Image 1 (cartoon, rainbow, N blue to C red):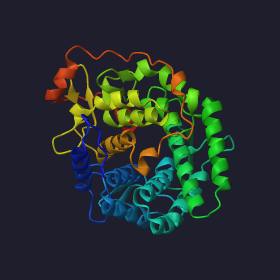
Image 2 (cartoon, rainbow, N blue to C red):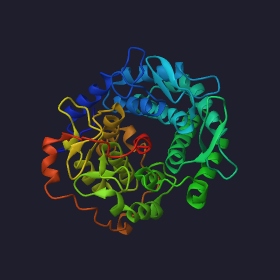
Image 3 (cartoon, rainbow, N blue to C red):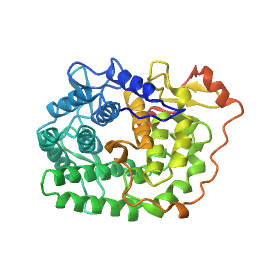
Image 4 (cartoon, rainbow, N blue to C red):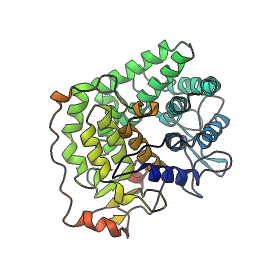
Length: 378
């Protein structure tokens, strides 16, 4: 059964959104951002996970077959593909690690042990490749160029996502009876770096992803995670609209909002998660796709895009809130915050007058809201 969030995303609409994603999938299994656009491994996996959430398992299986067939000998993938060819040859550590999250999610969705066994070499090679970029302090440098030279910089959001991928890889290893001690040790070192060595990471504090990703990736848990979300709630939340992608830009995005929903649900803040999720309904197109985001106070769509990964983030958030499948618990923390001790969240920023009403007649933005670098980081 597909996820069913009454009043926000009923089951029928969830299936329609999954089919909208599937309509973009190429014959070889690749899922690009949109028709005619490029694909990258991370967002390809995110879209495949969403297909599984809605029960489109054959389409998801084709996506994972594409992933396996395009893995390079060193365990990596190129950062970008278009029409079956490599477009961006450099290696992104988080893009590679996320294969483990997707493989584990597909196993949870399908219960197919044969798939997990067949995918094990893919996961093992990917994780070993990623760990070549881990530094003595625990942080993982985010990329290396196509000549094999590392880019000496670590990102909080990337490393937090890698934390989750290492957890999923270790879970797969355990089911298959494989050794994963080194991966667990690598994850522990990465968590320590994220918690205790903030100077080891590039400052991206203007981006919402740096705020909530340590919680989403389970690098922070319990009261510590609760405090982190409360600390910058008023910076990134626009009540009634969603999450600002960048703190100082008037642009709310669906994917960041849904990832925050997952983070809130992960630590036991279901009421807050449902509230944020309810704000996103106006950004759903009648055919099931979701728009990237909206500017305010103009209530204009920007950019004029409906990426598969944006719709995928909605389905993953809906699945977590629905809570009735094995996949629903993927991001939930094993030790969730004590509800009686949860911090009271501050108020978000107040949405400009009438902007929520005007979302019903969204317009296209006339000019860029953020620069190219900021858009690429979204």
